[in-house]
Image (cartoon, rainbow, N blue to C red; front, side, top):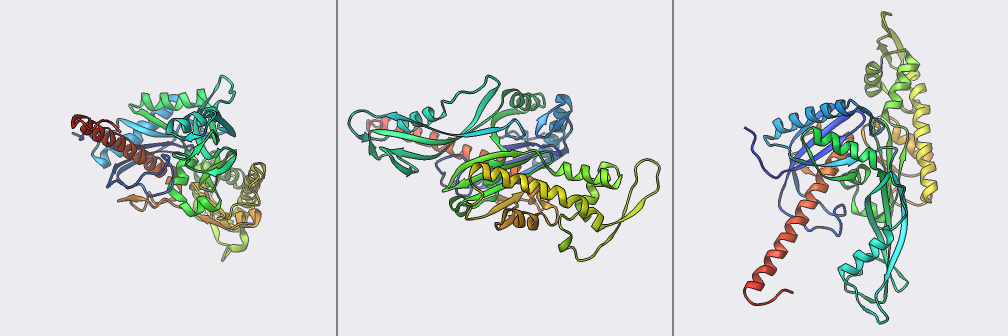
Length: 419
C-alpha cells in the first residue's frame, strides 16, 4: 500500500502532455521575499507521471472528462514511481485567456514620518491591486516590482525605513474565472485537491533563470504545444507577461498539411528531422514518410521540411518581438532571451530568434531537482519543475512561520512576553 506523507506535487496540464511530479523537500535554504524568487529550493524528485493530454486546446480545457482521464493516468504513474499518494498539487495556469497589467497604488502613513511595517507594505500592495475587472476575470498573481517612499523610487524592501507615504508598483496577472475553475474542477474530479494555481511561465522562469539574468533583464519564452508564454524580468522583478497564439502543434500541423501525412507522423518527422533554418543543415537528408490513407510511403528531402517549418518559426519569433515592443522591452534585456518548452527544441530555433530579435538567445532546461532523471531534465518539463520548486518554497515558508510561532510561545511560557 502506498505510504501517505506530505510530499510536494506539481500538476502541469499542457496541450500535448499532462505531467505530474512528486517531490520531497530536502534541507531548508533561506527563503526569498516571495515564493518565486532568487535562490535554490532544495527539492528531491521522487517520481513522475506523464500522459497524453486529451481534452485541452491552447491551454484551455475543452473536454472535461477527457482531461480528468489524462490527469488520473499521470497521477497513477507518478504514485507508482514515488510510492506515495497524491492528495494536493500546485497546478499551472496557461493559455490565451491570461492578461496582465502594471499598476501603482499607495497609502498615507500619517502627518509625521514613521517606521514602515509589514502591514503598511500589504496595504500599499492592496491599494495597487485595486483595479476594475470584468466579472468573468480573477486575479491569480500580484507581483511587487518596487516601492516608492515619499517619492524615492527603486526601493525593494521598505520595512524598517521611515516615511509618510508608501506606494507600490505591481504586475497583476488575471485569468478567465471559468477557465481557471475548469482546471480546478478537472483536478478535483481526478482526486487531486488544488493547493494553489501558478502562472506557468513564472514557474518555468524559476526553474530556468538565474538571479543575475533577472537582475540584468531577460525575456523567457516557454514554447508549448498550443501557445507560447512570455515573461520579462528586470531588476529582479516581473515587468511584463504575454501569450502568443502559436505553439509546437502549429508546426506539426503545417508539416502534416504540407507533406500530406498524418499528424502523428508529422510530429515524428518534425522532432527527428525538423530544422527551422536550412543554412545550418549539414546535408539535405532524404526522409521516408507515411502518406495519408492507403497511398504508399514517399520520400522527401530535409530542405522541403525546412521550407515548411522556417516560415512558422519566423512568424512565432516575429510575434514575440512585437509583444516585447508593446511592453517597451525590444531594446532592453541585457541578459538576452531564453527559450524553453518542448517547441524550443526545434533545430535552428535559436538561430532564427537571434536573427529576428537581435539579442543573444539560449535554450534552457531545468536543473535544480535532486535525483532528476535525464528524461525530466528537458525543456518541456521546465514549467512542471518550476511548479515543484514553487511548492517547495511555500512549504519552507510555512515551516518557518510555525517555527517562529513556536519560539514566541516558548517565550510567553517563560514569562518573557511576545516580541
